[in-house]
Length: 543
Image 1 (cartoon, rainbow, N blue to C red):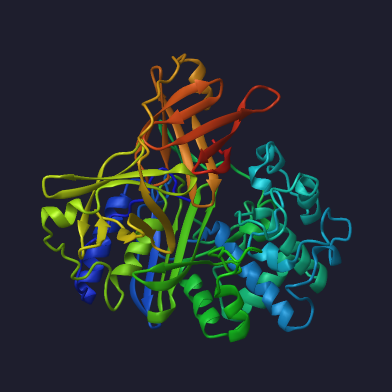
Image 2: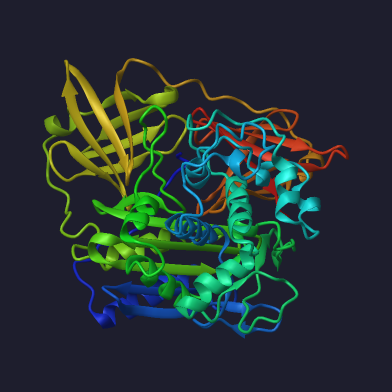
């Protein structure tokens, strides 16, 4: 899903010596994670060799503790890798099968005879994700057993029938943790500790616990209009098998090596986790078991991020070149996804954008691809020529220059995104490609809709919406106000004004999208739902 816009600023490099790796990466991280704010730890490896290991910013703002690479973070949804591998370990031991029905382990679960472990693993079960439900903040402050969490969401209406759609879902991994406990007789925490952490020597990895003394624990922070605040506290029993684990970059490298070396599971089982799965209609999900499937510079990448109150993490693995990058951060609102991908792309054998200098095309060659292109969900993109420069503009968004790599392939400025133009049956066609995601647009005579005006806003009333809303582990929207204006700032993107449409309903002018806020019984704003491109994403207010 394209959220507002996706632009990654990439460096054009031809090669990086060891010295250049250090200086270049240092500069990138010093800019993104300054010394006086929450920070990050990073590890970059290639063919089993550590190319770069460093830390930036502060591990604790109150005590002015400088971050170092040994610091331990909550890793959020990267936990799902550990849960998925645990399930595959048990399958190899004959204790379960990924095609087993959920009803085998939870006989009274609604629709449990239609849902498989496979569908829990790859987010196609249709079960309601409990992190999108109202009341979670209050529910999450008290320790809960796995079955109590399951009872919290199990009677909610399903989002879709099993296998019909893909939607990231934390509830599925709560159920998987319960299944691990049921077939082993151990708690999820004990299983992970004994069968993974102890076996691999991950001595600085833990099942999260707010009360336990954990050496080198980094403190978590959330941004506010006045600066950072300590992250909201929840019981670590709530994220459970979907997001409860803690680790450091060195231990994560041990984990990565164990997976690629087939230490815990066989190559056959690893292939299940690292291979794209499909919906009932044959469409790819771009997800395996606990890992997302993507591509980087034309090569497959296997990756996942994590987000929990006060922490955002990202890891990426490029199998063809045995590149692994892990970045752990201790604040929401400054996602490491872009910088993680950037680092991986820069140490590839052929680094991203090497020798991709723009070619010179004639006015006639450039004019050939101008026009309006209509994509799925009525998205319009306008390709225009000004002087010798071609531009692309999504309806309601800003113009972005695109530069030719050849007479039909154009790259967006400072981006992973390309256009590939062609003609079919006398009509122009544009393939809009951002890594693994592709959209096809065809020539259209449609015009842009007129600019819509918003209703007047009460400066006091709009303060109700101020806060940060988490829509998925790697993506949040922060709402701020200034006078009678209200602004939304998505993870890794600039602040943009939103406009009132109705009570609790706002629209964006830069892209065709809406934000609808919901309230609890006390009239407090608790959630926001983003509607864009025919899809919707609901997020909980976390501060």
